[in-house]
Length: 405
Figure (cartoon, rainbow, N blue to C red):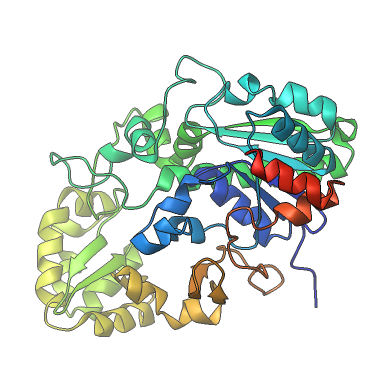
């Protein structure tokens, strides 16, 4: 079997909370890294208390935590206690990567910033994830996903024009920030292995705001290069028509007829050939100018048959089309099941029942990267990890009783 664990042998210290940082380390764990989650004693990652199942929140095994911490180890450390700082430094000495998502300056105030830890381990790759980055006039402002969505402009291009703005329906800024961090960390690991920077580590500064804006290439470039102010276009593709969401007999369908031949194929499938010769729809620009009229005519035909019929007919004619599904419907697609995107863990400690969680969106050598263990109970690896650092059982018990663990 070919290797699907390219980061095997890499140790990552995950000092992050809630979403962006944990999602970054979720990717690294599935790529084979040993991820040690360093959490506050007694409460751990705030995500342990978040999610739709209140009973799990009380157990500090909230759904939000379970979603992105499978395969990680958990150690609890009070980083305000000098002994906790010393233990972290011992871990850093053996680690390859440290990821944190505190506000800029917090780790420095704890005397655990990059300048300090790089002296402990010059090869350390230190990644700091924050809302706005480690420099600039906004660096100390608090940032949550919705704040970043608003500041990035995403909310002004989501929804209908001249209507109330809308956030994207999941924490897209946190998620993109985490993916950006995972990409940067993987690149730094590869560069260090190649001897770049004389094998020394590096400091990675991830801004959620910049990460999101970087993904808005077409929209941003239309403004930067062409001077076109981005607008909200609802479910329509602003570059072509008919390309968007349309009503059918039993639901909705997405159609992407971006080429002239695809528009003509849509007309043929819907048995409205006269539209091909209509002056209002002859060219791409004509169709964009008359989008609403065209959509109405197409929907008159689309509402005569169910969605599945039209999806098959359009795809057979070379026109990309797909149903608009709910999340449960999407998860039940055979395509998702066949490609191993969902992991099953039986009788998870702390949860006391089976759980199903997502893996990553990648395949390596035809396989879905996976982890062997479920999300950890808070502090479940304290003894193993501290024993590995040379602490005796008595010392570990004392550290626990005194609130260091």
